[in-house]
Length: 281
Image (cartoon, rainbow, N blue to C red; front, side, top):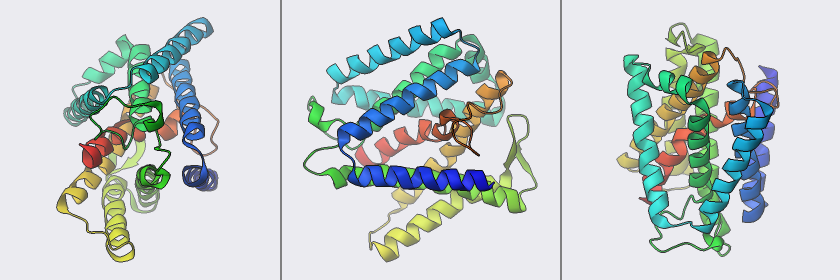
Protein backbone atom coordinates (compact mmCIF):
# COMPACT_ATOMS: atom_id res chain seq x y z
CA UNK A 1 0.00 0.00 0.00
CA UNK A 2 2.83 2.41 0.85
CA UNK A 3 4.40 1.86 -2.57
CA UNK A 4 1.06 2.65 -4.22
CA UNK A 5 0.65 5.89 -2.22
CA UNK A 6 4.24 7.01 -2.77
CA UNK A 7 4.14 6.31 -6.52
CA UNK A 8 0.74 8.00 -6.82
CA UNK A 9 1.96 11.16 -5.09
CA UNK A 10 5.05 11.34 -7.32
CA UNK A 11 3.02 10.82 -10.51
CA UNK A 12 0.34 13.40 -9.65
CA UNK A 13 2.94 15.96 -8.52
CA UNK A 14 4.99 15.43 -11.67
CA UNK A 15 2.07 15.84 -14.06
CA UNK A 16 0.64 18.86 -12.23
CA UNK A 17 4.03 20.58 -12.40
CA UNK A 18 4.41 19.62 -16.05
CA UNK A 19 0.95 20.93 -16.96
CA UNK A 20 1.51 24.22 -15.17
CA UNK A 21 5.03 24.97 -16.39
CA UNK A 22 5.79 22.70 -19.36
CA UNK A 23 5.37 23.65 -22.99
CA UNK A 24 2.59 22.14 -25.10
CA UNK A 25 5.11 20.36 -27.31
CA UNK A 26 6.82 18.66 -24.36
CA UNK A 27 3.50 17.58 -22.83
CA UNK A 28 2.14 16.28 -26.14
CA UNK A 29 5.38 14.42 -26.81
CA UNK A 30 5.39 12.85 -23.34
CA UNK A 31 1.79 11.69 -23.62
CA UNK A 32 2.53 10.27 -27.06
CA UNK A 33 5.36 8.22 -25.54
CA UNK A 34 3.09 7.12 -22.68
CA UNK A 35 0.39 6.05 -25.16
CA UNK A 36 2.84 4.05 -27.27
CA UNK A 37 4.24 2.37 -24.16
CA UNK A 38 0.70 1.52 -22.98
CA UNK A 39 0.04 -0.04 -26.39
CA UNK A 40 3.29 -1.99 -26.03
CA UNK A 41 2.07 -3.34 -22.67
CA UNK A 42 -1.28 -4.21 -24.22
CA UNK A 43 0.47 -6.21 -26.95
CA UNK A 44 2.71 -8.01 -24.44
CA UNK A 45 -0.35 -9.11 -22.47
CA UNK A 46 -1.79 -10.98 -25.47
CA UNK A 47 1.56 -12.69 -26.11
CA UNK A 48 2.43 -10.75 -29.28
CA UNK A 49 5.79 -11.58 -30.85
CA UNK A 50 8.52 -8.92 -30.88
CA UNK A 51 8.32 -8.73 -34.67
CA UNK A 52 4.57 -8.06 -34.58
CA UNK A 53 5.01 -5.56 -31.75
CA UNK A 54 7.48 -3.59 -33.87
CA UNK A 55 5.10 -3.69 -36.86
CA UNK A 56 2.03 -2.64 -34.87
CA UNK A 57 3.80 0.16 -33.00
CA UNK A 58 5.18 1.45 -36.30
CA UNK A 59 1.63 1.40 -37.67
CA UNK A 60 0.39 3.30 -34.60
CA UNK A 61 3.06 5.97 -35.14
CA UNK A 62 2.01 6.29 -38.79
CA UNK A 63 -1.63 6.72 -37.70
CA UNK A 64 -0.59 9.41 -35.21
CA UNK A 65 1.29 11.25 -37.95
CA UNK A 66 -1.69 11.05 -40.31
CA UNK A 67 -3.93 12.48 -37.60
CA UNK A 68 -1.56 15.40 -37.03
CA UNK A 69 -1.53 16.15 -40.75
CA UNK A 70 -5.32 15.95 -41.18
CA UNK A 71 -6.53 17.16 -37.79
CA UNK A 72 -10.09 18.54 -38.14
CA UNK A 73 -12.98 19.42 -35.90
CA UNK A 74 -15.45 16.83 -37.35
CA UNK A 75 -12.97 14.03 -36.66
CA UNK A 76 -12.80 14.95 -32.97
CA UNK A 77 -16.59 15.24 -32.72
CA UNK A 78 -17.02 11.82 -34.30
CA UNK A 79 -14.39 10.15 -32.10
CA UNK A 80 -15.83 11.64 -28.90
CA UNK A 81 -19.36 10.42 -29.59
CA UNK A 82 -18.24 7.08 -31.03
CA UNK A 83 -16.10 6.49 -27.96
CA UNK A 84 -18.99 7.24 -25.61
CA UNK A 85 -21.26 4.89 -27.57
CA UNK A 86 -18.74 2.04 -27.36
CA UNK A 87 -18.19 2.56 -23.63
CA UNK A 88 -21.95 2.53 -23.03
CA UNK A 89 -22.11 -0.82 -24.82
CA UNK A 90 -19.30 -2.11 -22.60
CA UNK A 91 -21.15 -0.86 -19.50
CA UNK A 92 -24.35 -2.70 -20.49
CA UNK A 93 -22.27 -5.76 -21.31
CA UNK A 94 -20.76 -5.68 -17.81
CA UNK A 95 -24.14 -5.14 -16.14
CA UNK A 96 -25.90 -7.98 -17.94
CA UNK A 97 -22.96 -10.37 -18.25
CA UNK A 98 -23.27 -10.74 -22.02
CA UNK A 99 -19.48 -11.13 -22.46
CA UNK A 100 -19.64 -9.76 -26.01
CA UNK A 101 -16.64 -7.52 -25.47
CA UNK A 102 -14.76 -10.44 -23.91
CA UNK A 103 -15.28 -12.48 -27.06
CA UNK A 104 -14.20 -9.49 -29.15
CA UNK A 105 -11.06 -9.10 -27.04
CA UNK A 106 -10.34 -12.76 -27.60
CA UNK A 107 -10.88 -12.50 -31.36
CA UNK A 108 -9.01 -9.28 -32.18
CA UNK A 109 -7.14 -8.02 -29.09
CA UNK A 110 -4.46 -6.12 -31.01
CA UNK A 111 -6.94 -4.13 -33.09
CA UNK A 112 -9.01 -3.26 -30.01
CA UNK A 113 -5.93 -2.09 -28.14
CA UNK A 114 -4.90 0.12 -31.04
CA UNK A 115 -8.38 1.66 -31.36
CA UNK A 116 -8.87 2.38 -27.66
CA UNK A 117 -5.40 3.75 -26.94
CA UNK A 118 -5.13 5.75 -30.16
CA UNK A 119 -8.56 7.30 -29.60
CA UNK A 120 -7.58 8.28 -26.06
CA UNK A 121 -4.37 9.87 -27.38
CA UNK A 122 -6.25 11.87 -30.03
CA UNK A 123 -8.88 13.13 -27.58
CA UNK A 124 -6.21 14.00 -25.02
CA UNK A 125 -4.07 16.16 -27.29
CA UNK A 126 -7.14 17.92 -28.70
CA UNK A 127 -8.85 18.60 -25.35
CA UNK A 128 -10.20 22.14 -25.28
CA UNK A 129 -10.40 22.60 -29.03
CA UNK A 130 -13.60 20.69 -29.75
CA UNK A 131 -15.65 23.87 -30.08
CA UNK A 132 -13.60 25.23 -32.97
CA UNK A 133 -15.43 24.47 -36.22
CA UNK A 134 -12.46 25.33 -38.43
CA UNK A 135 -9.61 23.09 -39.48
CA UNK A 136 -7.14 23.41 -36.64
CA UNK A 137 -3.49 24.27 -37.09
CA UNK A 138 -0.60 22.75 -35.15
CA UNK A 139 -0.77 25.69 -32.70
CA UNK A 140 -4.10 24.37 -31.45
CA UNK A 141 -2.94 20.85 -30.75
CA UNK A 142 -2.87 20.24 -26.99
CA UNK A 143 -2.32 23.85 -25.85
CA UNK A 144 -2.94 27.24 -27.37
CA UNK A 145 0.28 29.21 -27.03
CA UNK A 146 -1.64 32.35 -26.13
CA UNK A 147 -3.66 30.88 -23.27
CA UNK A 148 -1.77 27.96 -21.71
CA UNK A 149 -3.61 27.95 -18.38
CA UNK A 150 -7.02 28.14 -20.05
CA UNK A 151 -6.40 24.71 -21.52
CA UNK A 152 -4.18 23.21 -18.80
CA UNK A 153 -6.90 23.63 -16.17
CA UNK A 154 -8.99 20.98 -17.93
CA UNK A 155 -6.13 18.48 -17.85
CA UNK A 156 -5.53 19.27 -14.18
CA UNK A 157 -9.21 18.73 -13.44
CA UNK A 158 -9.21 15.39 -15.28
CA UNK A 159 -6.13 14.13 -13.43
CA UNK A 160 -7.52 15.28 -10.07
CA UNK A 161 -10.92 13.70 -10.71
CA UNK A 162 -9.54 10.34 -11.84
CA UNK A 163 -6.93 10.25 -9.04
CA UNK A 164 -9.49 11.06 -6.34
CA UNK A 165 -11.89 8.46 -7.77
CA UNK A 166 -9.16 5.83 -7.71
CA UNK A 167 -7.98 6.70 -4.18
CA UNK A 168 -11.52 6.86 -2.75
CA UNK A 169 -12.42 3.46 -4.13
CA UNK A 170 -9.14 1.91 -3.04
CA UNK A 171 -9.03 3.16 0.57
CA UNK A 172 -12.73 2.80 1.38
CA UNK A 173 -12.71 -0.65 -0.21
CA UNK A 174 -9.71 -1.64 1.92
CA UNK A 175 -11.15 -0.22 5.14
CA UNK A 176 -14.84 -1.14 5.05
CA UNK A 177 -15.38 -3.09 1.83
CA UNK A 178 -17.10 -6.45 2.27
CA UNK A 179 -19.30 -7.08 -0.77
CA UNK A 180 -17.51 -7.85 -4.02
CA UNK A 181 -18.34 -5.67 -7.00
CA UNK A 182 -17.08 -8.07 -9.66
CA UNK A 183 -15.49 -11.14 -8.04
CA UNK A 184 -14.52 -12.78 -11.32
CA UNK A 185 -13.07 -9.78 -13.16
CA UNK A 186 -11.57 -7.84 -10.24
CA UNK A 187 -11.78 -9.65 -6.86
CA UNK A 188 -10.34 -6.70 -4.91
CA UNK A 189 -13.06 -4.24 -5.92
CA UNK A 190 -15.98 -3.85 -3.53
CA UNK A 191 -19.42 -2.27 -3.79
CA UNK A 192 -18.57 0.01 -0.84
CA UNK A 193 -15.41 1.19 -2.59
CA UNK A 194 -17.30 1.74 -5.84
CA UNK A 195 -19.96 3.89 -4.12
CA UNK A 196 -17.24 5.89 -2.37
CA UNK A 197 -15.38 6.39 -5.66
CA UNK A 198 -18.51 8.09 -7.02
CA UNK A 199 -19.68 10.14 -4.04
CA UNK A 200 -16.41 11.38 -2.51
CA UNK A 201 -14.99 13.04 -5.67
CA UNK A 202 -18.32 14.70 -6.52
CA UNK A 203 -18.76 16.07 -2.98
CA UNK A 204 -15.12 17.16 -2.80
CA UNK A 205 -15.23 19.00 -6.13
CA UNK A 206 -18.60 20.57 -5.33
CA UNK A 207 -17.24 22.01 -2.07
CA UNK A 208 -13.96 23.08 -3.71
CA UNK A 209 -15.54 24.86 -6.66
CA UNK A 210 -18.44 26.38 -4.70
CA UNK A 211 -16.69 27.60 -1.56
CA UNK A 212 -13.03 28.02 -2.56
CA UNK A 213 -13.14 29.07 -6.22
CA UNK A 214 -16.70 30.50 -5.95
CA UNK A 215 -17.66 28.83 -9.22
CA UNK A 216 -21.31 27.93 -9.74
CA UNK A 217 -21.86 24.19 -10.08
CA UNK A 218 -24.96 23.22 -12.04
CA UNK A 219 -26.89 19.95 -11.92
CA UNK A 220 -25.47 19.16 -15.35
CA UNK A 221 -21.93 19.42 -13.93
CA UNK A 222 -22.79 17.09 -11.05
CA UNK A 223 -24.35 14.64 -13.50
CA UNK A 224 -21.23 14.55 -15.70
CA UNK A 225 -18.93 14.22 -12.70
CA UNK A 226 -20.97 11.22 -11.56
CA UNK A 227 -20.74 9.72 -15.05
CA UNK A 228 -16.96 10.28 -15.16
CA UNK A 229 -16.52 8.58 -11.78
CA UNK A 230 -18.66 5.61 -12.82
CA UNK A 231 -16.78 5.15 -16.07
CA UNK A 232 -13.42 5.29 -14.29
CA UNK A 233 -14.43 1.94 -12.80
CA UNK A 234 -15.78 0.72 -16.15
CA UNK A 235 -12.42 1.47 -17.79
CA UNK A 236 -10.64 -0.30 -14.95
CA UNK A 237 -12.87 -3.38 -15.24
CA UNK A 238 -12.46 -3.44 -19.02
CA UNK A 239 -8.66 -3.60 -18.79
CA UNK A 240 -8.90 -6.05 -15.87
CA UNK A 241 -11.09 -8.31 -18.03
CA UNK A 242 -8.47 -8.19 -20.76
CA UNK A 243 -5.64 -9.05 -18.36
CA UNK A 244 -7.65 -11.86 -16.77
CA UNK A 245 -8.36 -13.26 -20.23
CA UNK A 246 -4.62 -13.85 -20.63
CA UNK A 247 -4.01 -14.64 -16.94
CA UNK A 248 -1.93 -11.52 -16.32
CA UNK A 249 -2.15 -9.65 -13.00
CA UNK A 250 -0.50 -6.35 -13.99
CA UNK A 251 0.26 -4.85 -17.39
CA UNK A 252 3.85 -4.22 -16.29
CA UNK A 253 6.17 -3.41 -13.39
CA UNK A 254 7.21 0.13 -14.25
CA UNK A 255 5.15 1.79 -11.48
CA UNK A 256 5.64 0.24 -7.99
CA UNK A 257 2.32 -0.47 -6.30
CA UNK A 258 0.35 0.23 -9.47
CA UNK A 259 1.76 -2.14 -12.08
CA UNK A 260 2.29 -0.84 -15.58
CA UNK A 261 1.39 2.30 -17.50
CA UNK A 262 -1.77 0.69 -18.86
CA UNK A 263 -2.89 0.01 -15.29
CA UNK A 264 -2.82 3.76 -14.64
CA UNK A 265 -4.26 4.74 -18.01
CA UNK A 266 -7.32 2.47 -17.88
CA UNK A 267 -9.58 4.97 -16.10
CA UNK A 268 -8.76 7.67 -18.65
CA UNK A 269 -9.87 5.57 -21.63
CA UNK A 270 -13.58 6.43 -21.22
CA UNK A 271 -13.39 9.62 -19.13
CA UNK A 272 -11.48 11.71 -21.68
CA UNK A 273 -14.37 11.32 -24.15
CA UNK A 274 -16.95 12.21 -21.48
CA UNK A 275 -14.97 15.34 -20.60
CA UNK A 276 -14.99 16.40 -24.25
CA UNK A 277 -18.77 16.10 -24.48
CA UNK A 278 -19.35 17.68 -21.06
CA UNK A 279 -17.21 20.78 -21.47
CA UNK A 280 -16.87 21.39 -25.18
CA UNK A 281 -19.88 19.99 -27.08
